[in-house]
Amino acid sequence: MANQTSIPAHDPELWVEATGFDGRCYLLGNPHTHLGRMVVWVESLKDAAYISKYDIENASEAARRWIEGFLHGNEPSPAEYLGIDPRAEADLDDGDPGMARWRAALAEFHQKGTMPSLVPVPSIPFPLDEVNGHVPWTWAGGQVWIWQDASWQVAEPQPALEGTSLAGSVCAIRGYDDLTAEVGDRHVACIDCGYTLESSG
Ligand SMILES: [Zn+2]
Image (cartoon, rainbow, N blue to C red; front, side):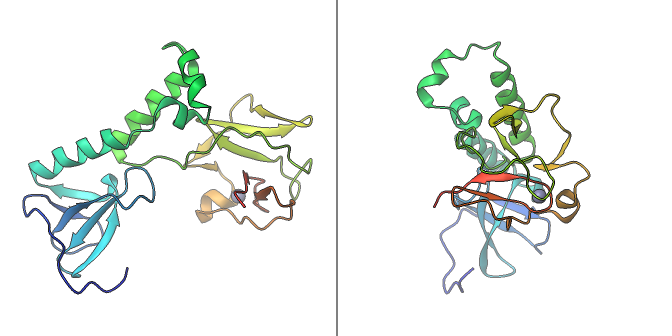
């Protein structure tokens, strides 16, 4: 981050110790990057940094309560998590499998402070039957979707994931997708696993 010339206002009671940083960090607020991400002032660096709950090794009691409140405030709604129109949320009853996926995601969010990037369920037809020999797939609403028989379908059975990568794929091992496949201007896709996203541009 840019050089900080002055120490931002912070509450000395809101200290944490986090992996990768010497000494104490002080909770400042929300960087608005990923849900659950927090900005801290790192005393030893005299600079700000971003951390998540899973980075925290030790914290004051006040900081723990601050973080719990922060995570509650960052919870996605069922519609946001499921990638559906907010007006459709009223049709979901508590027994809907989507609500179970949302509740499970919130439990993990409160435990680790992480949430996958949330996108709408896929709706734009994919222009190819395969990407470098891989079935085009994406993740939305807590499920893997595949492009099959010229439509987006929920994968049945659901493949095993590591994080948001297919378990055992080169992308899971490497830790990121290589989104450089040529797929027209409405999608990007990974040449190594077929993961796709609707492009925003
Ligand atoms: Zn990939």
